Each structure stands twice: as C-alpha cells, then as structure tokens.
Length: 147
Image (cartoon, rainbow, N blue to C red; front, side, top):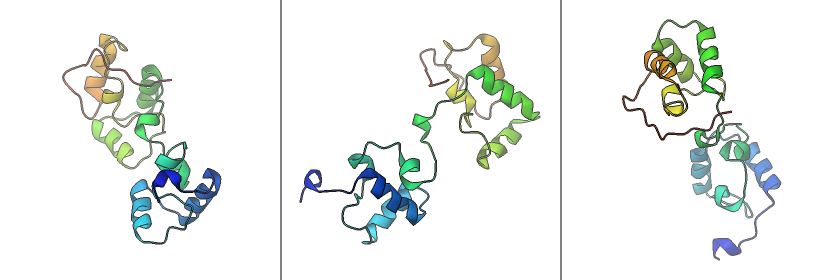
C-alpha cells in the first residue's frame, strides 16, 4: 500500500511510543525501524508524516536541530563567553565538545556571526581572535537566526 494511503496513529500517541524506546537520535530510530519491531500505525519516517518539532521532540531527547535553533545576539553571546574567563580557544572547544554550552550559544560563533552586515570591524576582530575556527572570507551576505 502506498505510504500516503496508510493510516497512522495520531502524533501524540506515536511520540509517546517513541519516547518509551529511549532512543537518542534519528539514526537510532532508523536502525530500530529496520529491526522489524515497529508496530503497525507508527511511521518509519515520522518527519514526513507529522508536522512535528523535530527529532528531539519526537524521541524525547529535547535536542533541537542546528538549523532550527535561535541564538543569542552577538553582543550577548560575547558577554557570556567573556564571563567564562577562558584564556584559549581550546578551553571553549572543550566546553563545546562536552555539550556544556547553552542551546542558544553556538559552538562555532565565527560561523553563526560571520555576516559583516551584522557586525562591525571590532566584533569581526573579536571573532577572529577568540573562536576555534575562522573563515578568512567574511561573507557580507551571510545571515543567521539570532534573537
């Protein structure tokens, strides 16, 4: 039967089932669906069936895809970074790697705040100096979703 003609459980019931599995990612979900244990009425590709809030919502992990995140303004993020008192980029990278940054602080601020239209030269200099990776070309047309 074509996928579009199948009858699926309501989103809330499918999500409750998924939460019970304690899976941590969309990849784990895909592996589970291949096991043959997926009950009837639960889609193997929920992102195409339900207009939900993403894998984090569906699986119950709370994770938000990077492209759906809203980040603090550059000034607020910089104040947060300065408040940590780090002496090197390596310290920032370690914090990021351990997933200890708030969800609204980007791991790579140089990529999030790279648009010259959003920052003055002083801010661009700060990003170059303090961020783990820096792209030499500042894309004047770059935009990011910031609060």
